Length: 579
Ligand code: MSP
Image 1 (cartoon, rainbow, N blue to C red):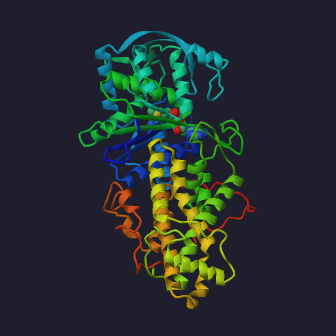
Image 2 (image 1 turned 90 degrees about the vertical axis):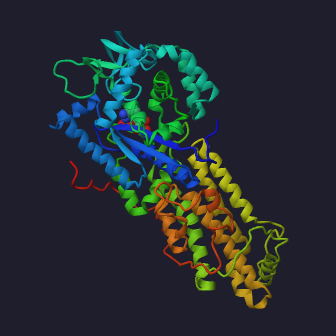
Image 3 (image 1 turned 180 degrees about the horizontal axis):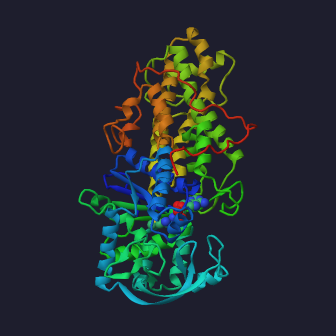
């Protein structure tokens, strides 16, 4: 079932909540970035959006690292939760809330859900023996443990055989229901490769899953107690999953759970999100998520990132890149070159420079400043007239004139029958962007914006307004031709800027300031930040279009060209006040 990008169904997008044993790195920033881009895009479409991220604090590894750092678990969690908050503010994420699982608003409701499952008999006490991955805090099935040579599939550390008396969630009861939901697409597991993997594993059969940990002597007092049994703590994973519901389980926010729920994460934790969590929700009598989207991994300069190699791309390095090339360039690179699909993606400096120059300095930025400069030079920075965007070269009389002028200047075009129907082109690009958004295909969504920029570039090369400008006096309606051309370029770029804005909100707002388009943004509209939905904003020549007489300031280039021979930025130190 496609996502609803035409009407007002609320949209609820989440990221995993991150462990606070350590600092944020590119992986955490990436998932939260794509959630941000999706949230901003959906707000632009006109939907009521809620975007949640946060931190997962009750893990054993949090209390362990806290002890190593001579802090209480809560102190350590707070230090790192602040680091995540800081990193996310720096990345300009527009999350509507930030949950910490140590907050009462989460703990109380999570506990209540578990109690309900206990009362219903969906959770029961029993013995459990299994392969435990201490680094990931999860049990693995015999098959998965064997496949990985009894080592953690994520960290490669040895698995431990553990036997414990535990509470179990009767996941096995939901096998048929889950198969039906995922196969039919009621729960849309994306990308397709991940859906097949999940269904394959589902076919091996489901077991009961442990949902508690027996408290041992010497354990830190950390985590939520099992309702009615103080000897156990709720297993951190089960409690953490509940965050998606606890935070919107209020009168004002419940509309988001009733709307379209989209969980984003990496492939490492898809099983929890596509299988265990939907089954828990079903048992609780709640709707499952609409989409479970699991992207692949970032690797660094061709190598998998790991603690032992010490090659994690930390937030400090992203700060250094942002300092040098702008934050929106970093957001652009990560969103368009990231592991959104099934394949891993490499963060390599040379690639960053290549993409920065090709997409931003030489394309988006260059096109926008070229058009601004021409309006400035030929019309003192005032848009001289409009153009309905329906013309093609053979028919539009003013463009016939342009062709004649180019011929006079000895620069006749190769193909005089070529058409540039901007109104249609921009409207198709907007439709494509909306369609891509339905499957969280943010790369295609942004490429729709870029396709308009490419079209404008081709148009400028084709009808050479700078040549035409020199021929104006010799032509009857030459002025009209130049007006039509420049208007078309500016209006097309305005529409492109809307489609690019979810990834580059600051740079596009800068363009709007330079081009007197700030009326598109509405600071009083707390949800979207826009005055109207995309369909209206992006209408060629419509209410929000560029108008005759509008001022277009020259402005600085949005993206300066980068020199590939310069050394890669070095990580800047973290701000002092932390730690
Ligand atoms: N706390 C759990 C999640 C609970 S959600 C109810 C957890 N936390 S984590 O800190 O380990 O974060 C894992 C997530 O971070 C991944 O699913 C992904 O979103 C992100 N990434 C971590 N490393 C990554 C890469 N190398 N590349 C891309 N994203 C990765 O698991």
